[in-house]
Length: 231
Image (tube, rainbow, N blue to C red; front, side, top):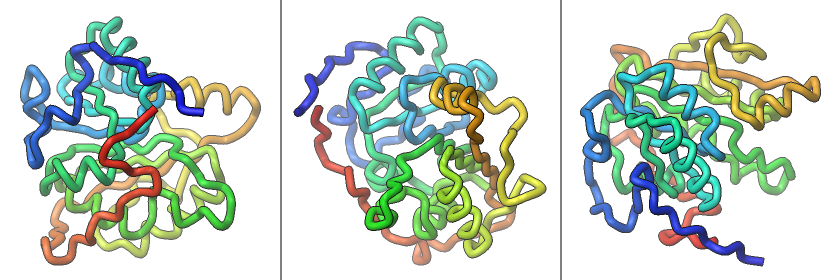
């Protein structure tokens, strides 16, 4: 059953239909500042906290779900934060149409769909190709955070990182169950309250790493990616 699409009138919301291909996303903010991307903003718990922690960073929060974008915008507007913009967009589609080299100071991937069934594992967002692509979009010394409540997804990604040239692990281990000052979403708090762990990974693009344009993998369009998202 298709859910009713909620009209989002918030000034925080960016309608992708009004953008031109290749448009500089930093122009969407009132003040020019370094740009960070949250992939899968849910209902906005994380981005509200992170944007308040780091007012000198602009944050673009994206999600494929209309209702989540609506709730995130409402919370951002209520908070008075001006360094957040929200877009309904799949990450790989966004980057293939609006991405350019060294555009992001940080990428946050919080509890993405784990596609737990064995036959669906190839639908997971984070794989070798994706991590290589992110090196192109991250600035030198830019941060990439991958957070999941699913242990086998954490293990899978932890095993991939060492095979991708260009990253330095910022932790003492492949992943940790605690990360100081990292905001917790409502989903994370609910999971932790049940005594279940959250797995945190934090890597940086090496400051002197160069990924030649010809070695950037082609964007793999996601299973759920559509030019026009409905519902």
